[in-house]
Image (cartoon, rainbow, N blue to C red; front, side):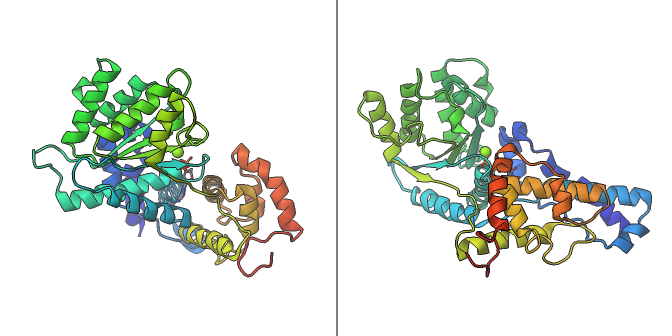
Length: 377
Ligand SMILES: Nc1ncnc2c1ncn2[C@@H]1O[C@H](COP(=O)(O)OP(=O)(O)O)[C@@H](O)[C@H]1O
Ligand SMILES: [Mg+2]
């Protein structure tokens, strides 16, 4: 038993090493796509915990730390619905000839699971295509079905093109003009037979001010020249004019991008309908099943903490998972070995959810709102 516990964290560390930096390179992406699922630490009772020696206990708790910090991705209804839409659009783009492929814009607030859900999709797509078509193209190049670029603050067009080269580790990524980088990016996409180009946090692209036309022209150029499905992710893309059909020349260019683009979003959990409450409960059940605490009892999360967690997360998956993660860390560290409102009250959450919390808490306490299925509302 002890040896299994000790081998756990080492074997599972691979996924922990995948930060954003490594994900911006194809090797990092492949590691994510091919990583085996993390080994799950055994559930031990209090008595079994007591019998562990000091070292074995430390190793066990270390493996639980890692485990609770990486509980996802859960197949939430939002994620499953998004994946269905993505498959529909991606597979329908598999047309012969030079037809321009329809793009996708995933437009939703932060913390709703956009990046997580898209990476899970990219992982499935990478595996499917490599399995069907092989690791190398007919010309003998490495096959990279997915290219993913994540933008950070205030990225210009040259840096954007360069980021694609960076993903592929292209030798020409250090010197050149924006256009040079663009041509080389096209070369990489063609030789790797890339089918899906993901641009995450597109709102960081300098947009609509001086570079507005440049940006939209560039995406038109990508849509026309690159044989890829373009998946743009961001916050407030619609507001930035990606879909607008305005009057000016600039608006007209943007509108052309908009018409070919299907807009998708991700919603927070809502508890104002029986279906919404069932979704919320199923997600809590899935989390409860994964939590590894000695004094966990059935219903600890899905029943006893349903209202509490809804109020504190306002139905946002990011805030929910932060609370659960931090709560589990505290429960292990302090030896409490269970989650309840008292312990979670001490755990801090992000600012946005805390704001919505007070109001929601009142509604839940006064009975105006219920989060559990079978409750009245
Ligand atoms: N399906 C999921 N299962 C488990 N955790 C998730 C899931 N989706 C999101 N999360 C958690 O929520 C946090 C925010 O998600 P993220 O995908 O970064 O959101 P966004 O890109 O919309 O801002 C992540 O750190 C992740 O841990
Ligand atoms: Mg994101």
